[in-house]
Structure formats: structure tokens, C-alpha cells
Amino acid sequence: MNVSPLSQPPSQPATAAVSTASAPAAPLKTEASKTPAAGTAAPPASSTVSISNAGRAALAEATESAATTAKEAGSGDRQAQRLLAKEAASKIG
Image (cartoon, rainbow, N blue to C red; front, side, top):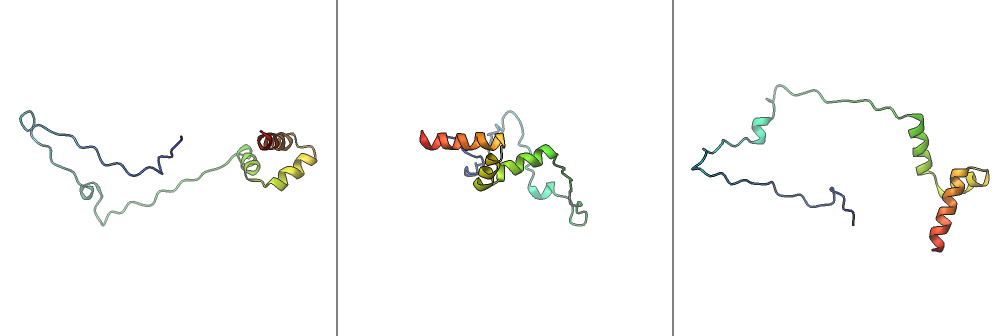
């Protein structure tokens, strides 16, 4: 069974036991010590994504309706014909 990591309950952080005889305990760092000062807020990150024409075509094929697929198959689209044949075979067997 495939389980998405997002559907799993959050795991508890791992803890390690430190022997005081072999090494002194290290000071704990908290989240507050990792964040920048309140006056020095970082600018929001931005990025630009461009999708290729092949990617756009793949998205269009993946999201088209059954009616669109049937229409394309009727007009000679080989990919649509294969998809319809595959769906028909899965319904039978």
C-alpha cells in the first residue's frame, strides 16, 4: 500500500541521550535563537516557472473530459483511441 508522507501523523523528534561522564551537555538552541531580529525581516522569495509546450500539451491531455477524448478518438486521434480502448478493456476484465 502506498502511503503519502503527508497523510502520516507527524513523528516525534528524535532524542539522543548524552552521557555527562564523557562530554559536557551542549546548550540547546531554540527556534527563537535561529530567527532574525524583528527589525531585519527578509524579503519574500519569488521565483518564475515556465512550462514548455510539451508540458502544456501533456497537462491538456491529462485533464480533458471523457467527452473530449471520445470526440478526438472519433476524428482520428490515435492517443485518444488507445485511451478509449484501454478504458474499455479495464471495464470488461
